[in-house]
Image (tube, rainbow, N blue to C red; front, side, top):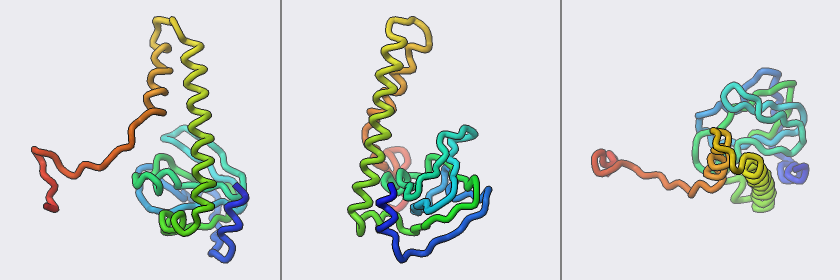
Length: 161
């Protein structure tokens, strides 16, 4: 992802000390963070799911692209310098090369998840235990349809109308 850095030249670099929370799970900011140097820890609940050290790594992209709250918390492990982009959506629109790089990373993650689902299904095929359901659960996560916000319902109409 180092290629992302060339698209950030001239932007404000910000240093964050260890233990700073850049992103809080469940909040919506619209911000993207691009790591210049340091180490960031990605947590889902209390579980560390990744430690990010690669310059050019983009964080907050899922929230920006899906228009949903952040799905994880990002904490600075060691003092880190990042580019903080306030309008992540606008940045990706004005920099399609970065959007393509982000798409490639997301495709790699989906490929890894799909490979994992296939492996789990193979390992637990024919087992009548609760572990056999792991593959089904993971498969359903990978194949989720795009969600469309639905303001209100027949019982509770959208108050804006």
